[in-house]
Structures are given as C-alpha cells and as structure tokens.
Amino acid sequence: MTAPTNPQQATEKNLDAMRRFSEQYAKRTGTYFCSDLSITAVVIEGLAKHKDELGAPLCPCRHYEDKEAEVKATYWNCPCVPMRERKECHCMLFLTEDNDFAGREQNITNEQIRATTNQV
Image (tube, rainbow, N blue to C red; front, side, top):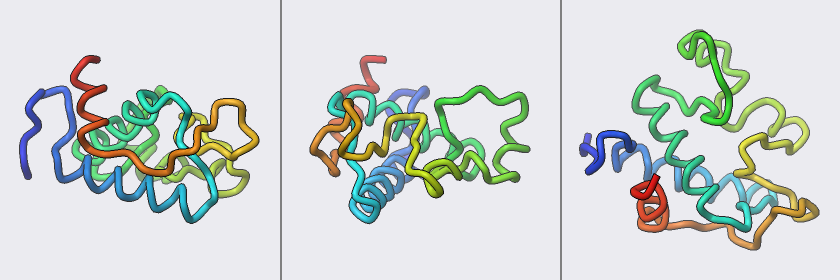
C-alpha cells in the first residue's frame, strides 16, 4: 500500500478505489455529488480511511461505539441500507437531483480530494 503524505489521510490505493466506486455508484443510481465538492472530498476520504483501518467503507458521518461490530453488521457500510432502499444519504455524498444541495457532478479527481483534505 502506498502511504499517504499526511498520516491523517487514507492510502492512495483506497482513496482511488472509493473515488471510483463513488463515481460509478452516482452514475448507476442517477444521483449527484454535493454542490460543495469539499463535502464530497471529505466523505470519500473518510470512506477510504475506514477501508484502510477496518477493511470496509463504513459511513464516516456517524458515531459508533464499536466500529468493528458495525462493519460486521453491514448496515452502515457504503452504500448504506437507507441509501440502497430509499436513496437517502446522510453524508450528502449521493444526492437526488431534487435535493437543494445536489450539484451536477458525478466525477471528482484524487487531486480535488487531496486539495481539500490537505487543508482539514
């Protein structure tokens, strides 16, 4: 695995995997990234960090008492059950076009993600 430049960031391998997954899933479900792409960047980075740490893309926008147990339960692994069943994304990663915060983008680059997460 390629180590991230910043130890608070995900590896390049998992960042790229989560970015590609997010783009493909948005296109497949007819959803869009948030109009503020910094939100998209932080969420994808969080998914990739969880993939590094836990082996699964656990939703980064929730608090968990036991992350390992949550991964095994799979309910909050991205795409979570509310997203799969009702297109409700708590993280604002996948938004339906009628959502006030939905942008027009279904693509983001690793460079855009790193530019945002290097500032956080």
